[in-house]
Amino acid sequence: MAEANKEEAQKCKQIAQSALAGGDTEKAVRFLQKAKRMCPSDASIDELIAQAASSPAGGSSSPSAGGDSSGTRAPTSEGPRYRGSTASAGATKGASATRTGKDGGTYTAEQMQMVQRILRTKDYYDILEVPRDASEDAMKRSYKKLALRLHPDKNKAPGAEEAFKKLSKAVQCLTDEEKKTVY
Image (cartoon, rainbow, N blue to C red):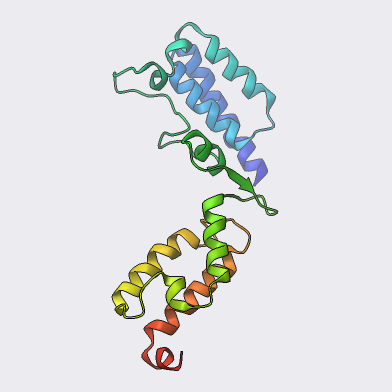
């Protein structure tokens, strides 16, 4: 896998070099950043990025900062083509501070608070944040909303998996009439 990334990074680097030769610094920077994401240990990519930034047209390669309205934009950390870590994107957008867990995943304080709330709550209605007389549809809507935020693929806070399981157990119990009466 790492070998494949190196090969793809080399292809991106070659495309960027030809774009630099053709004077298209935006394209060059875009492909160099892509190559850097695929192979962060390649120092020659950093040199090419610096070269692209110092080229005569390189000063205008960041129209998002200059407010250029020509319609072309260089990739930024907030752009749709950027797939960096959620920690850097969250920090750029002014989100709450992110932390890194033992497994390397990043999570916010809000995510951690949600996980802790679910884990310490005993009442299934409180877990789903619905009143006791809520309809089955309301419970399912609440479950979907919370499940999107708690799913272990989205929430890397410690205990997120257990909280997600507890949330699932709560909705299974409250949407099954037999289990609900026993509960």
